[in-house]
Length: 87
Image (cartoon, rainbow, N blue to C red; front, side, top):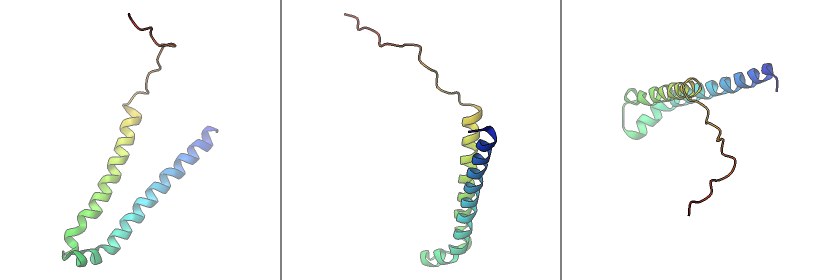
């Protein structure tokens, strides 16, 4: 896979993830009055659901950035055979 095609695939994956997040927020925002009515709550008090989705998305992105920038790949072991048991 060439660098250009890899960038395209990653861009499409990110675009799909952002689309799904926007779709989820739109669905919850549309259904919030019905959810509030069924729970006996004011729909304005249920805006926490939309905030939670947004913060969750931000946390996932921050985690990915952290893993990419800070985490190191696992080291390869230089041992090629198991150590013999000591008797």
